[in-house]
Image (tube, helix red, strand yellow):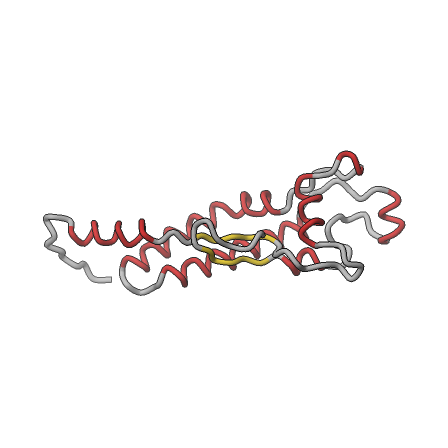
Amino acid sequence: MGARIVNDTRFEGLKALHRRFASDKRRVLVGVPKGKAEEDGTSIAMIAVVHEFGSPERGIPERSFLRAGILGALPNLVRLNEANIKKIANGGFTALTALNQLGVMAAGAVQRQIVEGDYAPNAPATIKAKGSSKPLLDSGQLRQSITYQIAAEGEGEAL
């Protein structure tokens, strides 16, 4: 890669780049879109909330897959953002492409967490009904429902 000399003593290029980044208020949302349901009609978003935060009154412990998945992937997400910011600054990438890459990586991390997470086992009655002690993996619907969307600030479907 060759060196490039830039004579911009007023930092106009840097100021323009800052304005470009600061004006883009889009964000990546990761989760389960409302509307998806199990075959019996149970909302997958509701299942996600109950497992993510737990439901002590129903005897369901917290099994954070969303927060844990994102936190576990945070170093990789930061590295991806740093690399993509350089590509955007050099004109080789659009912000939308970078946001889509971030969404794919974050959703994949959450899906991986569902499969590989170390959670409290299912209750004996649940194990008997499902035939498995591994939480979050009964039908695969929850994992398959994890997605992302790019939304403007203050917009976006509940995920």
